[in-house]
Amino acid sequence: MANPVDSLPGGVSDALGIPASSKIPGNSRVRSDTGFLGVLTDVPVFGAPTATGQWIVGAARCRAGGIPLVTQASAGIGIAATAPLPPSTGPIRVQIPSARVRAL
Image 1 (spheres, one colour):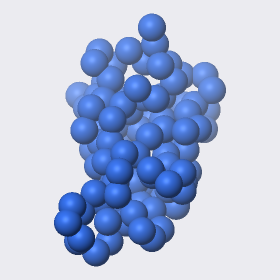
Image 2 (image 1 turned 90 degrees about the vertical axis):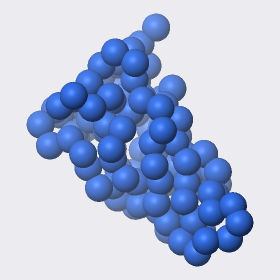
Image 3 (image 1 turned 90 degrees about the horizontal axis):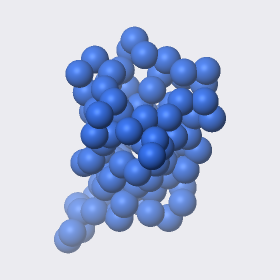
Image 4 (image 1 turned 180 degrees about the vertical axis):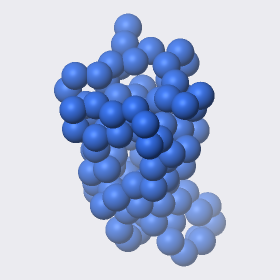
């Protein structure tokens, strides 16, 4: 079953539910109606306590520029601004995906 795809910088949230303020995109070609589709190399940027995020698991079959897309089923991890042990702030997830694009 296909999952909705990330396309909004603020559509990704950290473990506390705080939406990303922006993202450093890895895709500059494939767009949806709301923006560029999210890919595994995107770096979401958050406010405190989570500083950035890193995607670990993307879509199995759909790619943009050879890089797997980020869907609601993707797994990511939040990285703290200061490095306590462990430096992770928990999972990041797609909360507000594109309404029109789905991927496997």
